[in-house]
Amino acid sequence: MTRILLCGCSGRMGRAIAEMVDEHPDISIVAGCDRVAYAADFPIFESLSACTAEADVLVDFSNAAALPDILAYCGEKKLPAVLCSTGYSEDDLAAIREAAKRIPLFRSANMSIGINLLSALVRRAAEILGEGFDIEIVEKHHNQKLDAPSGTALMLAEAARDGLSYEPEYVYDRHAVRRKRDPHEIGLHAVRGGTIVGDHDVIFAGTDEVITLSHSAQSRRVFAAGALRAARYLSGVTEPGLYNMDNVIASL
Image (cartoon, rainbow, N blue to C red; front, side):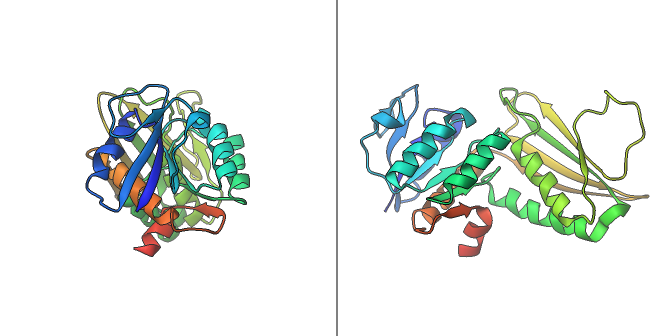
């Protein structure tokens, strides 16, 4: 049995994970951590310092501001953690890498298996198409999302960069500069509206042809399912390190 301590349990993703756990008899949520409580099937603590539950892995779907407390708690308890929040700063990412020297940590900008497959396809497409195609990324999310571009859009841009023979420049806002598009740019564009769960299009625009690689999340269940896969995987890991969805896919 994999015992999960769920941070951000009262949010949209936290509740989606709690609902999906019933479909996995080998996984249970032993406690949640959130400043806002609700009528859950497990105890909810306002802070990690108040938590008394014993867990095998922490799953975080709160926000980037909670990272220092999570790393401190997991470091003290020697508890593996699946970090699903987005909007991490460069300092946050450095802190994650440092903590991964002491405990197993899992981080992915997107917990969907499909998105991680898309990332691999984008990298391969960039390798093959090279300098002959302009790369533009369009992401769409609900009107409550705080960060832009999304962490997933940046993840896809990095996948494209890994496949290119040159170092691309990320361009986020074209209206500020009046100029022709540089062939070594990767454009990133954010759309916010309604209740869009998450759509990502990676456009390879060449001469007289366009290739578009797309992923559309129909519900938050795809992210919850990926987080549970990651939790199950990481609970069996004893070696410190920074793990990602590639490790989960390889273990399937």
